[in-house]
Image 1 (cartoon, rainbow, N blue to C red):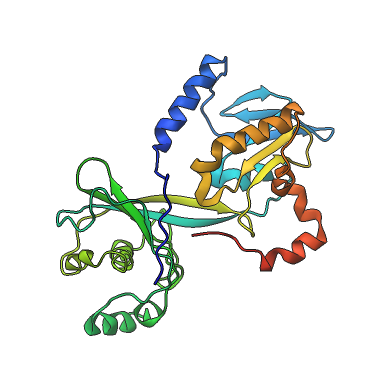
Image 2 (tube, rainbow, N blue to C red):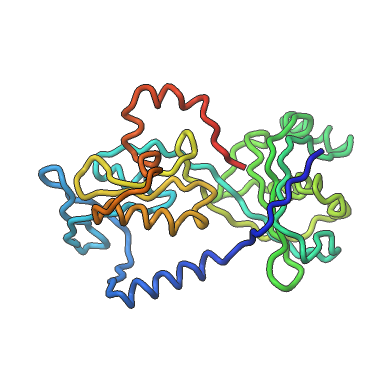
Length: 284
């Protein structure tokens, strides 16, 4: 077994970061229009208007940064982006047993594993048609950390298809137990919870990913349209840098050497498409 300790790391509040950036934009004269984009007008090969909640907003530049909705918004321009959505559920509970030290860092278990069921539980899962979940090897990646100043713990694990489809809209009722058992590989002190599961809070969202898990940042085939999307599980960490790169495209400023790697146009290269199945995604 090997352990990697990444130092000089941490986490931040995505909500607070967004609030600060929104306040700065308003202070700079930005107008915030809340609503749903219903349609995008593009005439003579370029963006002209966006319809939001019944209001037509004229624009010469449009940046599509709609997270999981990026693919659908781009379709309004007739552009098909190679983005798939991967559900990721977050399970939070009160760690009344103190199994997770409050000063613990962000933890990730990177080895595949079999879940620690007892014989009766395995038999019950097989009867329910979940033999793969009972006996199979599941993907790597349970991760989480303590949260806040109390006893709350947050755990995540996209454990694949062994328990059937995972949906953020209708979470599998087994989700919290599966994630807890998966996380217990790192922290065996969690195992006393198996007998009586803590009451969880479950929410989540979607990772928007390209086939090689590389973002889309830059112009689209329709003049005046740009995209910042498919930032997968590193969206908060990369958001400010991605926005800076998009702004450089829009303003015609000098681009960094890596800018070409994020262009939508890379998929027009047959040699690049041929390499996709062999490319390492870097996904935890």
